[in-house]
Image (cartoon, rainbow, N blue to C red):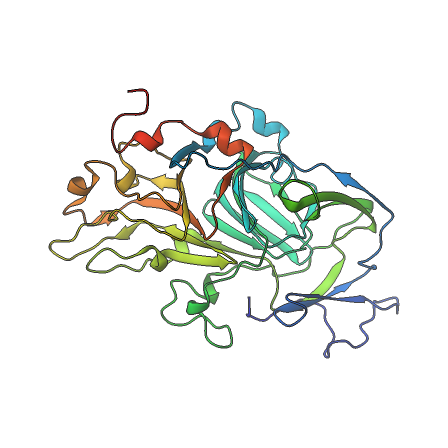
Length: 401
């Protein structure tokens, strides 16, 4: 995120002495991407950020993936995954259940009430969408207060934890990349400023505004990293001698931030606009889009719902968050649902949706879409939440009929 910020105490010149009140030096850490040839930040620690006193394996949540075979569209009911009071024993990191994934991205879901452990994802950036509930995301850069509709972008290897703060459970939809996640390049100038046609800008982003200093010794940090486990992932718990939140100041262009979906300004037109106009972020081999309440197509003969389409290079994953999604009426899909439309299957509005949409001026719908350029497999939560009948919703009959 090439948007410079400075927080807390930093010296006038980088890579120069910065001393504590007792005269000792702060430890300067450069956190940089792509071999230090892309965005970076400098953090100033009271302790030594490399120090360890112990390490042990962390058994990750089930990362097993099963091919979507035979190839069919699917309806996954995420709200069935954490029944009853189960959320009271779950946190937003170790409680994630894997819904879908491939070598580029993993999509997980959690309903939680517990504070997570300190956590660092060393495989890639995370984009966590807060479906419901409130939380403080404590990070080595500072804290972010987040709530419904917030996207939270956490750069790779950022130590952080999720602290639920509201009266209702925290519902979090995690998109974990094996790369970095950033605004689409076409929204940005050569030097990284948001351009005038972008549907959001720097004013809409919330980043930590002051240092967050923690206390404690022998603190555990859960690290997800590359390895030989399922999905190429392995977990390790590092025990560090001093609290990882010991940063008195930082500056640079790499940091966690939040962006609320309500601040996204939809792009509309006289006729139906294609999905790229709804894009909000991108990673390697995937994009994230959002569909928000908006005025719809205003040509006198416009058809507001999508035409049938075969996105031949992508799997399309739509998470329905709020409102009443016009194109899916009659399919059983509702709030908390995911539709899986795999590449190789043409999909579009449910029977009758086109006629019902004619003359409609406004859609009240909110959804988060992930399009991947390599096929997605089903995680254990995807298999557990599949309604088993969505594929037949266009024809009205299934294989047993």
